[in-house]
Length: 329
Image (tube, rainbow, N blue to C red; front, side, top):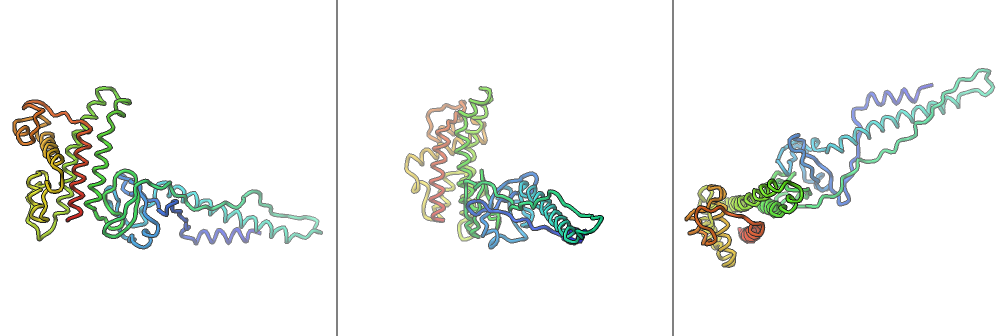
């Protein structure tokens, strides 16, 4: 009487895995999530590149560069929906077998029998097994300069998920985008926080933006300049405009003042000197700053006041300078 159910139970007992189909999003990208519980960064990889380029043994987190096999990168949502899919798949198989047993039981009954025993299975309709759905497409998309893997993300990503490459130009652009955003949140902070807290945080973000702009340029230059045939650069040389300009002049035959206008160069000198004060003297102006920057708006003993417009202008100048070097290096 329970032949089909018994067969289904044996089949389930022998079955080791249930294949769960995953959908790509509307633009053809698969959802992924960093398996490091301290990160859990979510991103997407183009479906065809996931199959053709990404290696099974090594996948890298675009945010923290955690490395793990390809089977480790399912999102929390995918795992939850896959469990539900697997459970529904088991239920559907059992329901089908019980209905088949009930139908067979009815067919075997003799209508002229004095006593009749039949099996009836109620409910248990077939379950619609749909692929695990994908999240909405992400705004930022890029392609690795080294392996050509296409991926997308929200926020900032620094490493290719396929080869782990840290792209100098990509990281540079990402950092400047972040600095621009942070420089413009002052009004939002003032509308949501206590006035003192808002001003303190806004000032801190602006001062950090000046320092991060120099650091992003330094990092870009160090990566671009890493050639054995070029003169060796001393440590932190690219934090200094004169030293960095001299190195590029020797390597490429072009100095910073040939890539920027006179006004841009003058502003860059002032901003680099301001960054130095913020990093080493808590923003307190000294005679060296006034002399080297040509900034006569401050007297020694005063403290720098950084405005959003200054940060944005600095970022624009450094972005232009960085792109010129990228194009030539």
